[in-house]
Image 1 (spheres, helix red, strand yellow):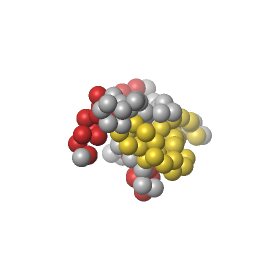
Image 2 (image 1 turned 90 degrees about the horizontal axis):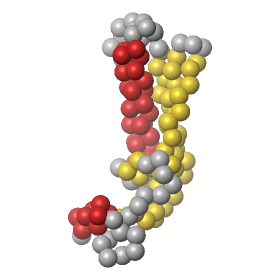
Image 3 (image 1 turned 90 degrees about the vertical axis):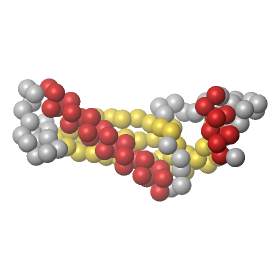
Image 4 (image 1 turned 60 degrees about the vertical axis):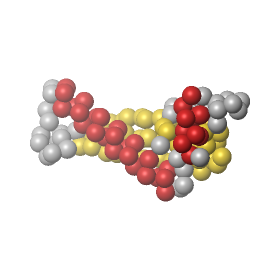
Length: 121
């Protein structure tokens, strides 16, 4: 699945817009994924929890795009917030779309899209 922060994907044509999709991941900033207490002074543990929350939000949004029949997410954004100084919230959102690669020789084709189009034949 293609996930981009841009409003279009070079070399791909949007066949269908499937709507806005949103995913949220909330983590207790006191505990790591394995249940071990993390101290706010442990920057490595805090960063790891942040990456885990972002990965979870992206996994959830991928599943929602696929559930809607899409194969790409455009204009993807990740926002983070703190709740009650204890919880971290990551919100991922964007537009679910169905895209098709533009074959070689057609206007807008790229090396990536041409190779993908050739593999679809």
